[in-house]
Length: 593
Image 1 (cartoon, rainbow, N blue to C red):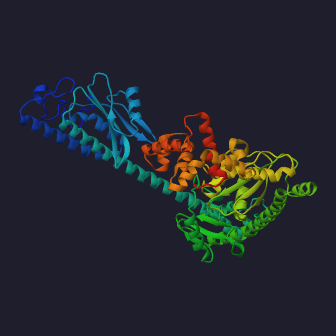
Image 2 (cartoon, rainbow, N blue to C red):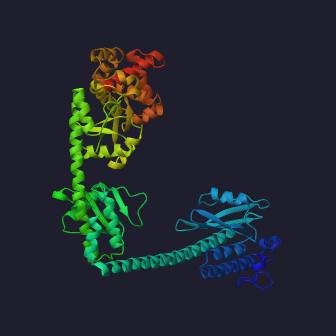
Image 3 (tube, helix red, strand yellow):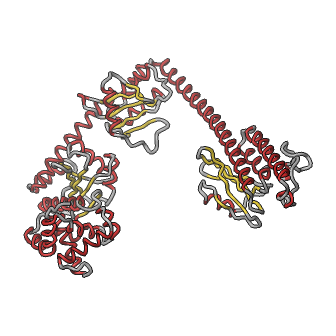
């Protein structure tokens, strides 16, 4: 720092004008620090004057590095301080700046990064006091100033240092704002140049072969392309220079061509999506919604998809609207055809799977499965899907089919009153189908049950019951959403609807009868308390929290359970039988809770 003493804040002799005597290490001398009040006031006045001059210098430059260097160079204007290091935030990193030509020690840099944006103490050999001070403005961190002292600063010196840090942070904030404005201006210029180039290209096409004929030529390639949505967005982007996209009616992206695609694509809000669909449906032709020009693919009133152009600068003209309308007209028959094929395939699947679940002739089933491209001669699994916010209709059935195809499953599909049934030729992955459906539906509130493998068509009805059993057990468990396999149910495999309920009722009566009678007479929750206690693995705190009661109340109830039932929860056999009995009581016999 001594090499820059010629700065305007210092006289040529290196000492600040009117400043008090200092030791060789830059500290104010003991006599000066303990002198009469008048010299102290003179020192404070000079310190404030130098800080004011420094503030003007800080705000007089737009270079962030120079601002940090000025602050480091003049930190001793605030007291007996030395600047150990300075850091500027660049992206997600803190870039160090040299102090007196020395880069900061690795331990100092490591400590600053550990602070994660907060102020904190820093240990430097030979320094009694050290502090890393965040240079932040309105909670935005711009960098750090690491300051040390051979003595512990006074309250006044700390106040002056705080003022210096605040002025430095404010100057950095202004400099960063100027830099952002310059960058934005450059980016806007680049985008305008790019848009101008695209417009010139479009004008050239129109000059050769009228814009409308060009639109027809582009759209003629959509029919029979094999991927109508991608072909349409590619053609629209080529014609308009604007990003083009297709979403399904729920707002999930199907195809995007052009720059600035959001990654990840935002999850749709069902309420806002429905409001947008109604707003567009009420008007004829494309409709502007914020930065998009939107038209609906809507044959016979049913919305199949949303076609849109992203026009943030509102530069679309009549040629753009013409291209969008022609694109929608080209896409409509393609999506209608695909929807018809999906409905026919779904109907064939449903008829075959319905017959298989009821029991059918093998030869007929094999022939029909070959017709729809499914190999029934392999082992297969029955998968049952239920989603709390979706009715088990054809729309949800197709959603389940898309999700299954997306994770590589080969399947037949049908639906029941409250669930969808898949017949798959391989064991589903433990989480893949559930995660795919969560993305498709926009919610994780779904449950999937999977049977054991079946090698015979005659066994399919039995395996369907297994899948339903796995689903029911999951629905009655503490974590009701997710995938459950029948072969992983363990004890719950014997607690299904196909077992002898009289034996199960006898078992429950033997172990819980006295508690059930007591609860009935006194309107007490002892059986429910015992059930939750086992569900929580015998954890007192978790059980009490779940039941919303105090630990002492829980202990009292458990003691009453011991007294009334005569069974000891500390006994391994009693504990196992009581736990099984509570599960049977809750899951099989349909008890409350």
